[in-house]
Length: 454
Picture 1 (spheres, helix red, strand yellow):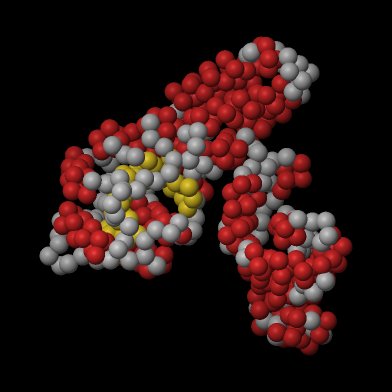
Picture 2 (picture 1 turned 135 degrees about the vertical axis):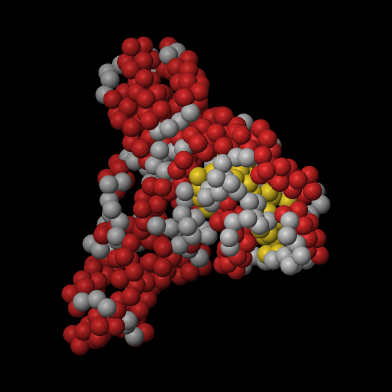
């Protein structure tokens, strides 16, 4: 998400910093390059014009041009204007005074509606809600079965429907009744889609809107389609009155033009983004964090939130004690690697890091996800005693471990050698390193772009 745009803007800012003083002339050049970068990122041209004009008015002021760090001031101005365009603050979901709150999930076929419906149900569950699902897509083959499978994955109940219920309104009416009877506070309605907007689709959605009186009508758009997604969202809003947008496949869209355009064009906020197929690859959209990523400043807040979810605080206190006492075992190492996987792909973790200093170099690293799996497999092939005391692992044990893990003796030897080196580093640095440094920087994770040797 935003990779291409971020890289281009970084080059613009580097040129600005290279100027001894900023003038109206070189500011014009910089803003022209920013405009080109935004247009190449597939940002709507009206949005680009609005942003550039706002930045120009503020950046051309004498206060900025004569400041000691004008380039930093310009970056700050662009950051503030980006946040305004993206929505100033995260748009929270609305809920009815009397449950269940009905969320109508709409969009074109293939945009990811069904998957997003299940992901949203999982997200709501983690927030303490009790959602229920229903699919009213009676046209697409196996559409309702697909949602039923996803419902089982995210452990959320779904209304399957009775044989005589062959119309979307019948399914929706019965699903709401069941949600009331079962004490469910949110009903997520996965609607049918079409390859393009047509009258029949809009008529059906209007009927559902009239029947259910939803508090949220969330339009699901495919980020990969760029400005087509923005146009579709705008058309749905004009005919249906959407209340927000879920942008899917953000992991495959390096430009980010749709995310930057949707709110300005439709007037409705981007509420969630999906960035992967897994049910947890779904997060609330934060305009300020997105602006930071675009400008290469990373997204440390989201990273810390993910880390807090992945690492149990009590276990980490115990791990800290073990580090101080040099009692960190291979089993502890394996558990930390497994917890690290909960943060998401290593590639996505690196993208949250600021593109400055040492972290800038990490942006070019190509993480080997399979290496993590191999390391865990090697440690899993050890006995509990071997994991507790790696000094027991002699030549015959190493051969057995290699056979059991499907690796080579050389790979087992490398793991043990680098684990020993990591223990020494952790012991010497544990008194000065913070939580994240210990977990990510000093656990032999060099192969993934971090110090340690793996």
